[in-house]
Amino acid sequence: MVEKLTIHLQKQSAFMRELLQVGLKLAATFYFIAIGNSYPSLQYTFRVKASTICKVISEVYKAIISVYKDEMQHYPKSEEEWKEVAAWFSSRWNYHNCLGAVDDKHITMKKPPNAGSYYYN
Image (tube, one colour):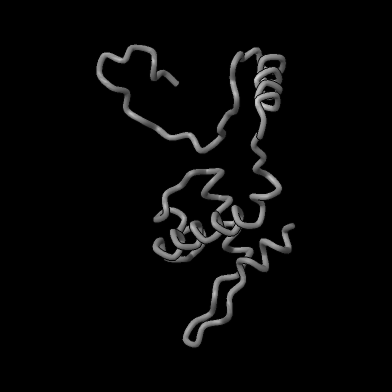
């Protein structure tokens, strides 16, 4: 599958400049996902302009989705399958009536006034 991703990210060479290597694109994207640095910070780490880093990360995200979406995205199609998912969350995590979970980057947010502990991390 990595070969498919590599092929998807490769482009024809440009007339006036050298294209970025696929390994650099992947490294910058995975570094961004893992560390969460800003684009200007990544430009100094990878010696690529921040505007290019922004485009590269977007390009890699799209490539990952297009290559792996059929393998990774499965949605239950019947009521029984949804009940199995809820039962799994209940037995595995003791989290009842849950039909799914999302795992993503941690984002810092400012809690609304008078929210108490609802927005405590």
